[in-house]
Length: 239
Image (cartoon, rainbow, N blue to C red; front, side, top):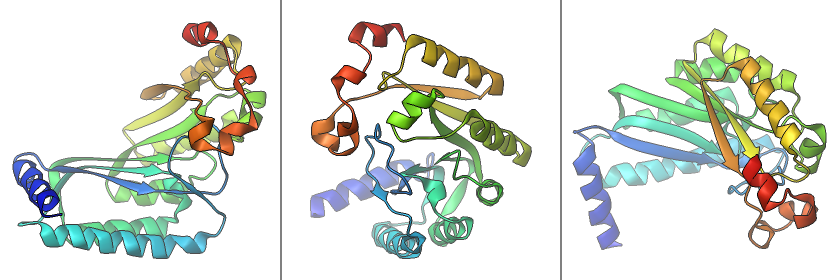
């Protein structure tokens, strides 16, 4: 533990004043299980879990700050999940207020978060924008209905279109769409259609991920289909 503390403080001192520090905050809750997902998550529709999670997160932040020789200067902050926009705008603000009660923003900072197109409201967009988040990303995966049903991620093009438009109206300077290739029942034609639909919305960035089929690690989710439902290695390379 003492070695860890020394290493932690040394890394902090090397970057804090020179360029600021980067922080990743994991918000693990989702209302539904996307069966392709390999992230650490907890599935629940009980939103009363929000406040105790944030309270615990802020107590952990206090423990880190107690070790530090000076006030943190935060340059980059990213919210991942899970679904960060599972949390209410009010609780996300409470979290940010708690973080910055003991830290400062660098003069040039960049905050970003991941949002679910079906779960991100205009109130989320405005609250997070006012808190300094000017970049966001949305998990699209694939617009094909059969693929969406198989991976339990039902979100029509209209949902992505709406949240992309609202993000830009609020003022976000970068909107990213996450696409995945190699999903069950996905074809070259379906991924082409997804890319063409994405082009219509002109996201500022596209993240194009390869699906990792590891049911022996991720268990029940990825066992809803098997290798016979996946594109072949050659088909995946073409995608």
